[in-house]
Structures are given as structure tokens and as C-alpha cells.
Image 1 (cartoon, one colour):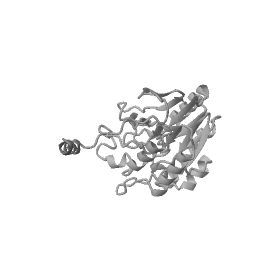
Image 2 (cartoon, helix red, strand yellow):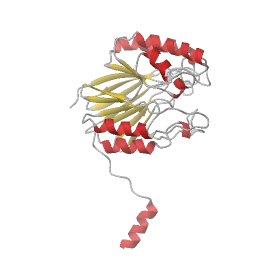
Image 3 (cartoon, one colour):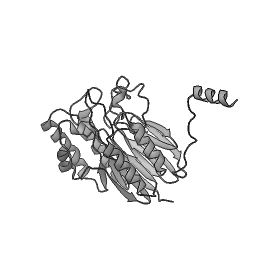
Image 4 (cartoon, one colour):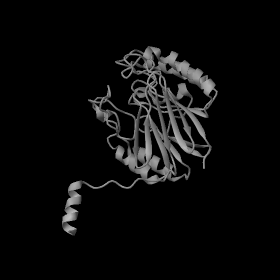
Length: 287
């Protein structure tokens, strides 16, 4: 049995100008508040899930990224960053690497008997380009999960559950941009690996939990989003306790708390039924 692991997470900081319901001008004060929280909470490590800036132009985005990086550089505990789609509109991968001091390619690490997967899958999306996982993305994930017997946690910027976007300010009318069009391939890999205990993502600017084949998929609310909080910034971040149970607490003005019994990571659900019409055809053939 792995040891208890204590993580803190933040996502979709969107430092910069105000954009629609994102309160970007409040990003650094809220991020500093998160840093103060971390000093008293003392998690084992911190994971930031991407979209550090609101894209404007290279100069503005670079300055916004440097501000975010300065706050993270002050932390005493280990930290890891994922790339978000907004981080690559006007900035290069090298810009992000230079400011954050990390490689920012897909990687994994083992800590206290847990296997943490930092999946830097392709996050490119434009008004005419829907996000999609590449063959290389999928091959990397499959190989990484196959190489360990430890219970795994998969972190990505874009959610992997294909959840409904009904009610989402950004994605109800644009659901194709709230997830990957070929996400079923990632779900197949996760299910067949039989060692994934949890998947965590940002991007969609709300708190959500799904369960697929026994695996919880959790999305974390944005630090500066306001569409769920009547115009005020959510000031959202999360803590995650992993042991025999998963305990997720979403802090801030849009709070949520989730507790899930993990059990054996390979405890899969009974496979779903085929279409009812197919069942009827089978019954008619077999009597």
C-alpha cells in the first residue's frame, strides 16, 4: 500500500487583461494568496495545470508569465507545470521553459509509492482547429503506464473524461474545444492499464467529477474565473490527499469536496451493455 500523499493544485491563472469572465488583473494577488496558503499547508508538491496567461501579444504575455514564474519561484516545495493552450498562442515552448525553469515535456515521477504522470499532450486549438491527441501523445502515455506497477495519477491540461459541457460559459456552445475529439483513445489506454487511480485536469473553468470504468476524472476550477460566482473571481485551488481514499477539496469562492474510496486501482466496472436494439436482435435469434 502506498503512503499518504498530499498535493496542492492550481490552474488557469490567466494573468493579464480582463477577458470575458476571467478576472486577469487579480491573478497575481490571488496567486500570492495561494503561495501563503502553501506555506501553512506544506504539501509534498505543487502542480500547476496550465494557462498561466491570457494571450494578448508576445510582450504582454511574456511579462505576465514572468510575474507568475516569480511567485512560483518563491515556493519551498517541489513544483511542476503543464502547458495550456493560452500559454502557446504568443509564446513559444522555450519562452515557458526559460521563465519556469522546467523542461515541460511529458514526464513522470514516483513519490511515496505513487506514480505521477505529467502528460504534456498537444494543447493546440484555434477557432478552426479542434484539440486532438497525437499518435505520439497516446504512445507515450501507454508506454509510461505500462512501465510501472504503482498506482498512477494522470495530470493533463485538457480533461480526458469527455464530460458534458451543458451550462459551461465557454464550452456549452463550443463543446469540441472542451476536450479532445479522440479522447476515447486516452480512456481506452487508461482503462486497459489497470493501474490508474485518478485523472486530473483544468481548462474547462469549473469543478467537475466523472467516473469511467472505476477511475475518477476531476476538473479544477480556474483561479480567476467568475461565471460561477456572479462576477467575483473564484480564487480557486485544490488540495488532494491520496491514501486508501481520495479526498479532494476545492478551496475559494466556488468550493467543492469529494471523497472516493480508491480500493485496488485495477478494480474495473462491469462492461456496459450494447445498444438495446442489438440485445433484442440477440434475444430473437436465441429464443
